[in-house]
Image (cartoon, rainbow over all chains, first blue to last red; front, side):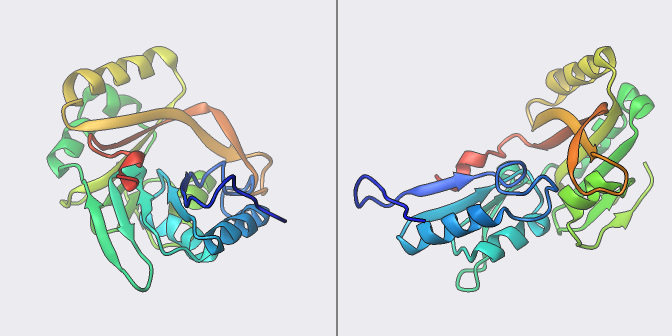
Amino acid sequence: MNIKTANQEKHLIKLDIDGTSTNPDFSTLNQKLKGILQKLVKQGHKICFTTGRNYLSALPFYQEVGLDTFLVTYNGAYISNPSEKAQEQIVVNPMANEVIKSILNEPLIKQNLRNVMIDKVDRTTISTSDDIYYQEIFFNGNPYTKGDI
Amino acid sequence: MGEKDALQLVLEFPNNEEMLNDILTILRSKYSAGITFYFGSKLKAKNPGEKILVPDNERAIIKIRNKFASKGMGAE
């Protein structure tokens, strides 16, 4: 494949993971896209995955393409550069535990809630469900704790 | 559910429009100073045992994060 750009400018290309970069299983990277992204990196462009996924479930996609840029996870609540060279946290915007407790104690939420999953700031995940949605989108083979509501 | 602060809270509900609207109103009116949230369908296996995922119209998901969470921040 020959990827041509109009000029020699280098671009920052941001793209989502789920439904954009994955196959319909939401757990494997589209190999055609992977080839294109690697070609763009070689041409000097910066590729940045921006996703609502948690850090650990997004990291394998970043590593598979071989990126060295930022990885935007939790929709921007946690932004890091996980490349071997950098290994740095850029943005960490957690929600206070009191806010989470208050939301979970709202009577209407309490009455109707079927499952809940919490990604803690220390990268631990607690979930009341482990069905395929949580397995493929959030856990992605990483450890999690099965909890109660 | 532990004592540490969190980067993401995912809530799953039955897909009942009236109840979900009331919950979204509560989140907006009482918590919008500190959180932002996304509402959508849960996913399920297209066929039992398959890994292809499709929207599950019987279940809804609300993903809640810090108000300042923004995908655009990576570029800034």
